[in-house]
Image 1 (tube, rainbow, N blue to C red):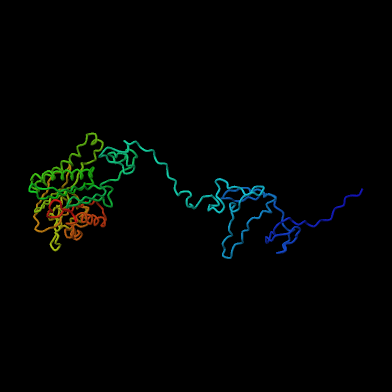
Image 2 (cartoon, rainbow, N blue to C red; image 1 turned 90 degrees about the vertical axis):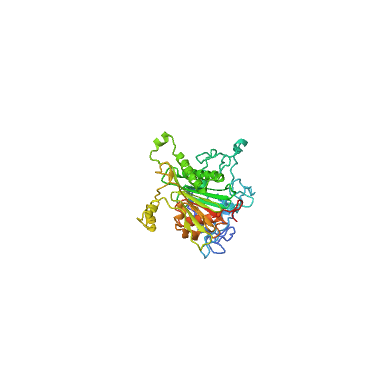
Length: 460
C-alpha cells in the first residue's frame, strides 16, 4: 500500500468580494487583483476571531459578529475628510430603510423617529417642533371648578390676588392658596379734588411706615377747605406703620367733622392732633400677657404734620420733624418753611449752641424730641396760621423728602411750576427726587394749592 504523500501547497483562492477593499471598485468573480488600483485581493487579512469592544454613549458594549451576508450589503460610503478639515458625515441607522428577510421594507417602528428626523444620535432627544406637531409645553390639567359659594366671597371681603377666590386673612395670606398678598402701602397715590398725595416705601426700608389722609369739605359760609395730614412712624418704636396710619385717619376725621361746624381751622387743627394722639395711645393698650412676653418693646409712635387751606387762610399743625413748606407760584418771591422741628438739631440751633449747618450735620440731628405715642414725655401740639398775599402751593412732607431738599429754596427748585394745577404730578416729581437721591427713608408728600379753589375744581 502506497503511503500518502504530502500535497504541494495550493495557491490561495480569491476572496469572494463584491467591491475592492481599497477603492470600492466593483469586482468580477475570480478577480485576484483589482482592475482599478491593482490591489492584491488574495492579501485580504482574515476576520479576527474576537468581538471588539466599542464605546456607545459612554457605555462599553460588546459588538456582535456581523452575519456572513453583511459583506454584500450596499452600505453608504462615507467620503474622506475634506481639505478644510471637516470630519466625514456620520450615517445613522435611520438613514436607511429596514427590510425583512424577503427584502420587503419594514413599517416604521412606534417610538422611533423616521428617516432624516432631527434627533440627537446619542439620546434621541428632539430639538425641533414641526408645525402642527408636539407643543412646546404641555398644559397642566385645570383644577376642578370650585363651588359657587367659594368663588364669590361676601361683598367687601378682600380677595386673594393669586387665586381670586380665597379670603385674605389679617396676617396678609390667602386662606385658600396661602399666597402672600402684596402690601398696599409700598406705594400709594391719591388725588382728591384739587389736592393730591403720594407715599413710597423708598429704596432701603423693608416696609412703608408713613401714612397720609387728604380730603376737602366746605365751611358754614360755603367756602371750600382742603385738608392734608402726613404722618411718619418712628422706626425704633413698636408697630410704627400702625401708629402712622391710626394718627392720619384720626386727625383727618377730626378735621372733616369740625370744619363744617364752624370751628376755627387753627383750633380744629389743635383738636385733630389731640385726637391723633389718643388713637396712637390706644395701640399701646395691650393685655398684660403681651407686655410680659415682650417687655423690651416700647409703645407705637409717629410724627404728624397737617395743613388746612381755605380761600383766605393757611393753617399748619405738627408734632415731630415732618414739615410744611410754602412755595409761591411767582418764583421770583421767596419760599418759606412753615414748621419748626421737634428735634435735637432744632434745639441746638434755638439755644444758640450750633448753627443750622453744624447741627444737622451731627449724627444726633434727627433724634426727635416730640412725637405722638403713649411714652411721649408731654404732648405739645404746634399750630400756626398764615394769610398769604399771593397764590402758591403748600407742600406737606416727611423727612424722607426734605433730607434731599432741606432748604425752602431747594424744594422750590424741584417743585414743578404747574404744581397748583397738577398736584398729583408735582407730588410724583418730589417723591422721584427723593428716590433719585438715594431713597434712604420712606417718602410721603402732599401738595395743596392756595387759595382753595371753589368746590368741584380739580387738577387739569
